[in-house]
Length: 131
Length: 131
Image (cartoon, rainbow over all chains, first blue to last red):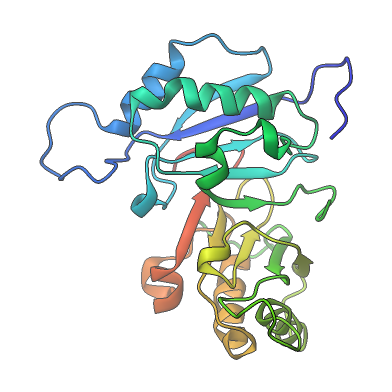
C-alpha cells in the first residue's frame, strides 16, 4: 500500500470494445464498449497508464467491462456494468487511483461507489498471492 | 493455439479458500472453497501445474471461484460457481487442458459444460492482447 516518490510500475487499462452492454445485436452505430474506449482516449492520463482496446473479456452479462493490471506486484481487477462513454470520468478516476499504487489496492474509502459494487473479480499479484 | 512437443509454460491454479459458496456465515467446518482446494491437492497434476490457495477473488456471488494463469503468452481465466470438493475432477479436467496449451485457449468442443457456462471473465495475455 506504500506510496513513495517514485513512479509506480506501468499500468494497462484494457477496455472491451466489442461489448454491447445489453443492446440488441442489430443496434446501429459504435458499440457501447467502443464508445467508452474512445471517450477514455480523449482524456489526459498519467504517464504510466496505457489504454488498450481488447475483444471480449467474457463478462458479457455484466458489460461494459474493463481490466486494470500492471506488473508482478499488483492485483489485477475486472470491473463491469459500465454503460458507455458517459462512464469515462468514473473509469478515469478509478484507473488513476489504481495506477498511483504499488499493489493495485486502492483504499476502500477512496473507491467510487461503482468500483466498490461492480468488481467482477480480482486476481492476486504474481509476487505475493495474499496481502 | 499451436501445441508442440515442448512442455508449455508453468501454470498456476489459484483456488479461493475463503469462499462459502452461499453457506451461512455461521456454518461449521471447512469452507467449500477450502474443501475444493484440499480435494484438488490430493490429485495427480502435470509437472507444469502449481495449485495455490488464495484469499478472496472478489467473485463471492458466484463462488467457489478459481483462476487459471500461466505466463505472458496465456490468457488468464476466472471460473466460478463450483460447489466444493465434489467438483475436483471437473476442475482437474479443465486445468490440465489449459496447462497443455501455449495460449490458454482450450478448443470450445473440449471444454466441459461447466467451464463453458461459468467463465466469469478472461484477461488477454501480456504478449498478444487479441487472438
